[in-house]
Image 1 (tube, helix red, strand yellow):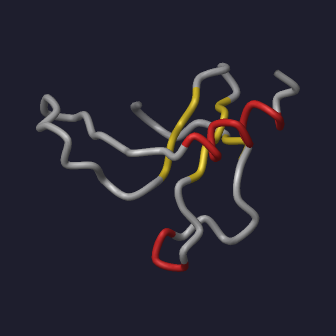
Image 2: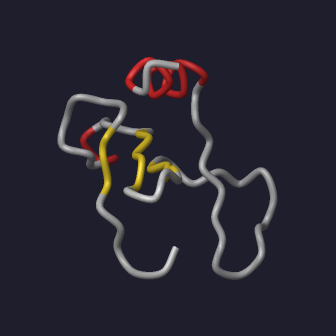
Length: 69
């Protein structure tokens, strides 16, 4: 995602730093897309410029509740 979009945090309650055990997290951009922050997954090697993040079901459910889904 080029540039920096304004983000609304949908999950977690800490400072957003994975080193402080506050990951993974889901954010929503002003354009309606989602950004996931978390520990990098090694399930496969993604194409250049892409990355994989493993997200527990509980984090996605928390994000859905925050959106009222």
